[in-house]
Image 1: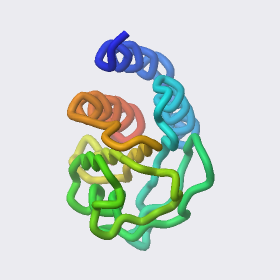
Image 2: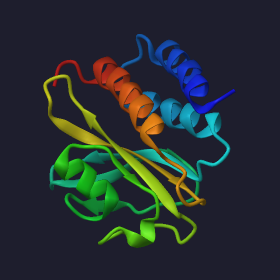
Image 3: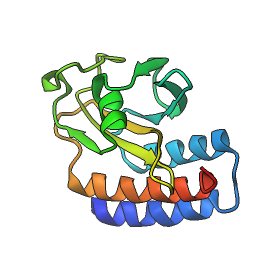
Image 4: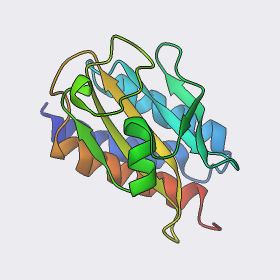
Length: 157
């Protein structure tokens, strides 16, 4: 099965998994698990959510321990959040200002979670131990998954 086919199955699984569930922690925990276990080369898969202090705070994830807080505009996660756009980083060592929560991370993709009203809420962060793991296929499907999550959880925001 190729990457796009895996994502198509994952989209259906996540839609079914979170349908009618509005508990943020529960939904994000199951979504991070479903994404993480769909691909063998995802080292860390999880969420950071915006706090009242304008920073991102660790939320449900799969993988090794991670940074608790990331300032908006700093590192890959903070930059993707502040700029409200997906970032695909083929080599984290070449990303100016990269925050190394784990020395094992080599490449990364960060996808903003955007409320239906266009307000950024947080980010989905996925790391790989391999260089050049992520591409436009990942960006496309992970953005679709974040749209599903956003509409399910944040319709009132």
